[in-house]
Amino acid sequence: MLRFLLVRIASAIPVLVILSVVTFAIIQAPPGDYADFIRSQLMNQGGASFAQADEQAQIYRREHGLDKPLVVQYFNWIGGIVTKGDFGYSMFYNKPVADVVGERLPRTLALALVCHLFASVLGIGFGIWAATRQYSWIDSLLSGISFLGMTVPRFLMALIIVYILVFQLNVSEIGSFYSPQYGGAPWSWAKFVDLVKHVWPVVAIATFGGLAYNMRVMRGNLLDTLNAQYVETARAKGLSGGAVVMRHAVPNALHPLVMYQGVVLPYMLTGEIETAIIFALPTVGPAIVGSMAIGDVYVTATFMMVLSGTLIVGNIIADMLLALLDPRVRQQGGIH
Image 1 (cartoon, rainbow, N blue to C red):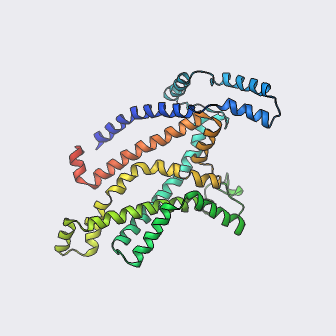
Image 2: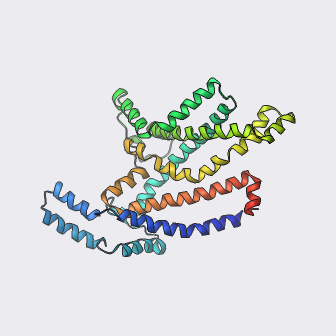
Image 3: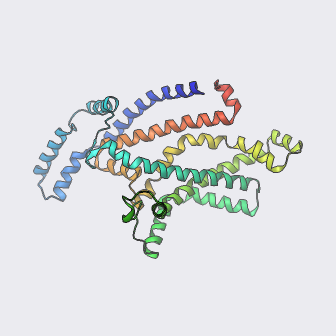
């Protein structure tokens, strides 16, 4: 297993290099950069003429290397990461990109993992419940919930919840993780309760979408597995219905969901973009969208590399989980 892990990590390095090149090129493809944003700000809000604003923009472009060729900018950026761990400087946030990532990524990961945990446990449980009661009213109800979760857009659910909270319940504290009195306070039960009060809409929306997918896949796979020959053999041996389902059918029906773990983490990180923007939460999603809009290239490129890294890590974890779950995978892959 250790050899398998080392091989996968080594093979991920060239993939990350290629992704960094492609990501940086795509981000720089649209015309304009942060100097153009500064020029428009000086003209629209500072009252400067075009010539004055353009002069300041050109000065800013030269000082920050934005006038250099794309290849030079890329190697300066990637060279700083490799040699000094420097991901560049955020021109909009006016701080190192590492600080911007360090502020937003941990809370986003925590939020995504909580949503994923709820979605997996509830989705798999409901999928088993629906499959073992096929065509009953429970199956019909859960199938309807699954259909809604996979078809209703997240931003629409977020807008509905915002409308209810603000205009019907007169909730004013939207757009932060804590109330003002808990912002810099040490952790306590009261602060945790306050955090839950602020983030439950995002958790509920993200969980609902993931739950619907997990439930639909689990139900379909389990129904196919319950009709397999080895399950019929287990029943013929006199095993109880619960033992047949949980010991023989469910582990094999879990295979597609285990492989799904390889893409679920970056999906969860980016899936909160709509809801986080609507609720104005300081997470990864709004930072990516905002930095792309104003040409803050190093913030965008770094966050995209983080998402690429989570995709690679997720696939490695999924392969290891699948190898632990299915002995046939270990034999075919030479994993011990």
